[in-house]
Length: 286
Image (cartoon, one colour):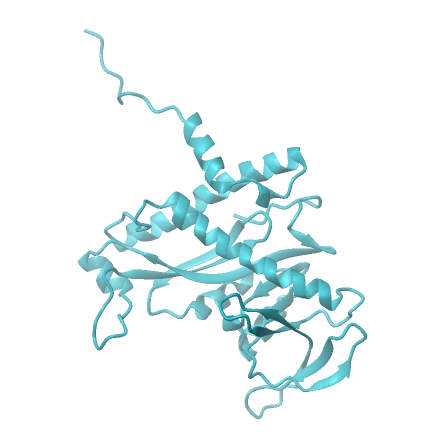
């Protein structure tokens, strides 16, 4: 699997950068001894209580706009989501712009992702110290981030974009702090990057398509063995990828953003076109 957006695919590009995003999620798996022993299950938050079902930790790297997944991981629940995310940095290439939420940021992960040649636009925690060294005309600024411990590694420079958005639940403003490897505001104005960052939510939509459309009503994998769960995970990604290719082709013909093509409707149409014989093998005529 690989990115599929062409040069004219809407929603997948910003000024020549291919937009990609990374995030993690969990999947519920059947309650069998094998799955429980391998994947484990979350606590309930009450003493030593355990959840009703085992869970698997997953992470995916997708192309925005098309939702094409081009790298993924599935491991036991106890494995860190960020460890899986960091493993997928090997799939990044120059010309990509990777969007990520603040839970992903660490000095090590940022430097490893940047070393691939891809550009980065990540939200960072509000407590991260970002002393300005240069104020830019568009309101963003250049900051230096030093290594977390004393070392011979030189600090690296990032561009910082700060803005506030109202929180729907309480009406208060929430501070967003983004850092980017794109230092030139002419190449990418601060307002553009602030708007662009929220395209990251596409990956949440991708996970929802897997869980709400492709899985059963209970949103639980079917496989009762660990090998079966892994095969099922990759099968669902493969089905999604194939379905996405059909939707992208339809969007291209209609000159639409692929996001405008419903994944649920595409799956429904594909299912309606699949011939299911009454019996297999065919009955012998008497």
